[in-house]
Image 1 (cartoon, rainbow, N blue to C red):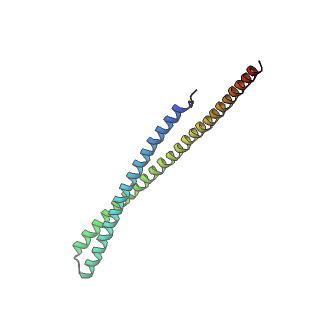
Image 2: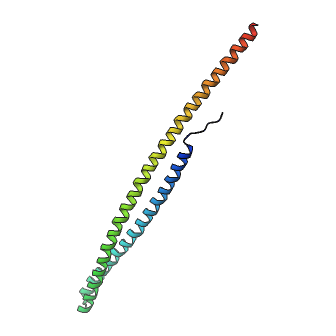
Length: 147
């Protein structure tokens, strides 16, 4: 008599779904990191340009160059605002996938706990059955010895 878990197929399905959600979460984290890296690079570029402009102002800079740098900084700031929105969206998406992953983990653990409890009942049933068989054998041996 072998043990078979009655919800094995469901457990396997839930584990596959969990892996899919884990992969989606990993992709969302990767996307967030990429966008955050681009935002960091833009912020760094803006900071470097502002430092460059400050240094040039000390040594003298034409009005045309100042305007050009200000336009460039203004464009970078618009791009930074755009990427900040993307970072927020990516973070929200990543958090949503993380929440789904944790829900799937809980669901899989429930089925694993059910399987564990079911297996323990199965072992108890086997132990009880073996005890009954041994008792019956002992009674039969005892009656055979008496006859």
